[in-house]
Length: 467
Ligand code: F0G
Image (cartoon, rainbow, N blue to C red; front, side, top):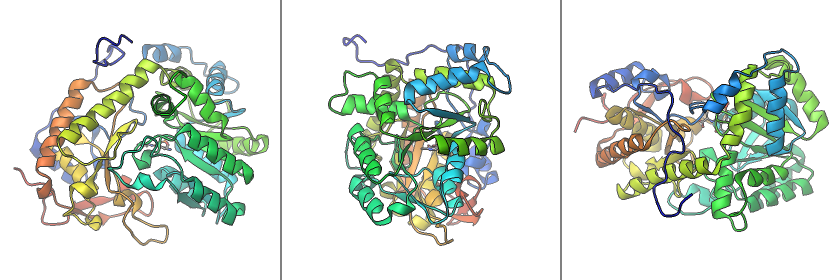
């Protein structure tokens, strides 16, 4: 990396392109009404820049596509499985590696095997599917991030850390009800914020002193490794791979959605050291996912993961990835848009509570803001606020800790000019912020309501009037 030039370029060139479609404001308003004011229910072709998620939306490399041609589609014992297993083993060191079609399948198998009603699973912050899979077992997902995590504008290098004092306290008071502790790297629901190596090491010590296993929710393990390399003392000379290996060495297992730092469109795995637990999990795997050497995937998917997991750890890639997200943050700062600072690994999170103080939480300010970004710029984002987290297991409703709009960046998909367009839209919507109005829910499913609820404007029929 020549230090002479400051521009960080996309470390790839583009071999295949996919057109994206401009729509008019009028067309977007109509599409939104048809979709019940829920961005999940839009047709993707009505979206110009899709920042709904970084999950499964990335571009695969020529090496991954080449690998797919080598896929062994044998039902049992396929060569592709062993290649995948060896790749995961090299990075994580875990003894048992169970492929799954995506992250939540790994969660369902793990929790379906290890949890019973009344159990407690602490985490820095559970992702929505993780929490839902825990609650489905009648157990409790307990979020214990450090207190700094809930102050969006507070700068902290490792805002994803788990609160070690609270962890110790839970294990002391209720240890027999805690079958495992989890740490999510990076902490997606808390702003894509990293967890430090020191925090993982200490959490591991606390867990093991109480005889409780530690599992890592490893979706964005490579991005977390980069933050450790660039922010934590003693790691600047280590490779992201070596850092990832050390992170996993403190844990007893992991769940993984390879749709993130596995660089694939579908895939995941569950891994662990415990022989007995792994045996039970493999039985569950056969019930729902398939034989343990393919786990709900094609042989070619396993090939793509085996390559992608290492591509996610390449330094040029990680430098470009983390820098492009930070760049959006810098532009938002100039535009006076409040967001979770510092910027995280895979996304920026706008602080809608601060940005739209005139919209009360029960009119879902972050949801309304995400609609405004679509109306004005064709940008699709996702609410991480009281729609996603407000509904309690007992049916009551309370405000989420934060009202965020996440703009998540697919890997290796958009270029600098897409990002510049985005920041222009953000700036414009920010200037209109006082005119954005809230929403109400008109139809709601019993769980994971953000995916399929239908909404309406809370006041008249307007979210954001034309300027
Ligand atoms: N854990 C975390 C931290 C996640 O971010 C996700 C997915 C999962 C588990 C579940 O994995 O989707 O493969 O079943 N997050 C995506 C997102 C959906 O948009 O953040 P999955």
